[in-house]
Length: 193
Image 1 (spheres, rainbow, N blue to C red):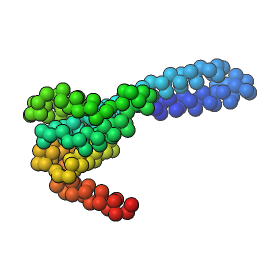
Image 2 (cartoon, rainbow, N blue to C red; image 1 turned 135 degrees about the vertical axis):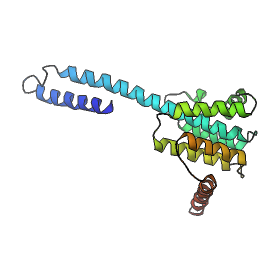
Image 3 (cartoon, rainbow, N blue to C red; image 1 turned 90 degrees about the vertical axis):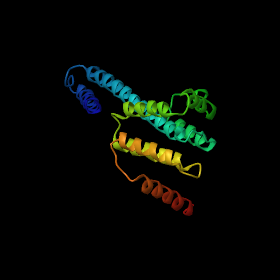
Image 4 (cartoon, rainbow, N blue to C red; image 1 turned 180 degrees about the vertical axis):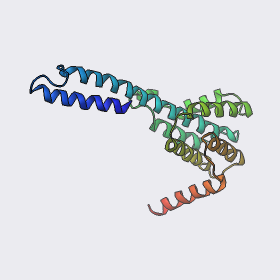
């Protein structure tokens, strides 16, 4: 879709430039640019839709990790809301940004933290991740790994959820090694500061 829009913008530009010498390609300078604008509008809608899917998938993934150990840690909430707000639509009003309290209420609204809740979130992750590219999936997994280690300990239940999310994304990895490597990267980053 984007390639078509760029082609139409190119044609519109060429048509505009040629219109000074005798009518352009199509005789209508505005025709191709109008069509190009329409295609860019729909392309931008697709980008917004893809971004919403990415944010939704990230939110479900992070929620599953937070709820994995039946305890909502304040540091996890703080990190999660900061992260999710970072990826919020740039047109959203500040009053509509996710607060720690709103997110905690959302997590509590999933019901008791049991297998059904986790299954519900994993199903949502499957649905929202279908069309995400691998780079987005890896970024989400990095954020989820950070969620696992932010409270200072990684519970087995968090590892299980993380591994399930990796599997949903079609990626295979040794969870312990992945978490260990993430911790090493964080430690190396703090040494360089």
